[in-house]
Length: 109
Image (cartoon, rainbow, N blue to C red):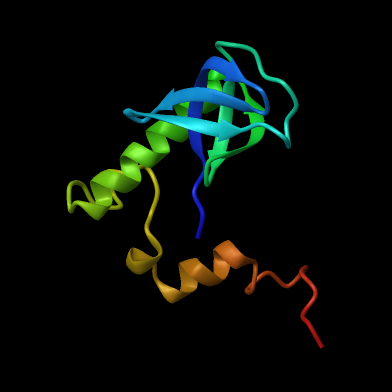
């Protein structure tokens, strides 16, 4: 799985941006998004900017990544997270989430 990291553009180089986010600086390829401007927020996957995002979305992604890191470190469970982790969900709840027990949804043949 690849996770996008929100990073803010600090400076530009041809075809790249120097970005900062989540406590690190990276040289990021910008070929897929065009030329960003200093101050822009980018969603970065494997040192390649995939999307320009608003600052609000960058904060949301950062908060989600902080939450995941806390859960991985054993701090706070699914109940504290504002959502239920699949491992803490009953089979009935999982079926409801996937729509498998919804009679209006088509069943694959």
